[in-house]
Length: 102
Image (cartoon, rainbow, N blue to C red; front, side, top):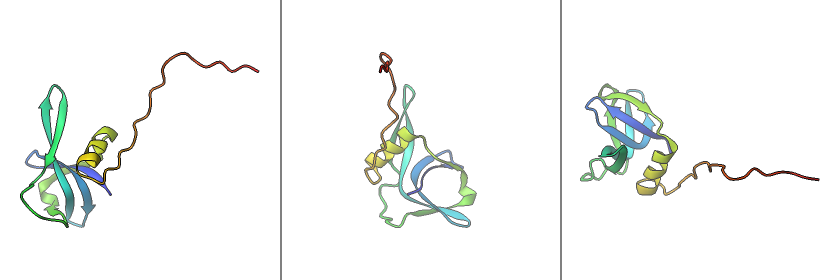
């Protein structure tokens, strides 16, 4: 899987499994990234009323850019729309330091 954020010229941001072709990309299991307020975002299916198991092809002329999402967003996508694989985040280290003695 090649999970990417595809920013369209219309301003829509789509999170999907992306297959790059010569003059287009194919987005599979696309979801729309929406701001939900207070600095958070939400995901919802993009074009949920269509049945396109092979994805939707978008010509490069309609795409502003594609970028890799950060880990938390990718985990959210995978749990909601993808294969269910969630990669654990790096644990934070806190508490007293360990002392090694002989």
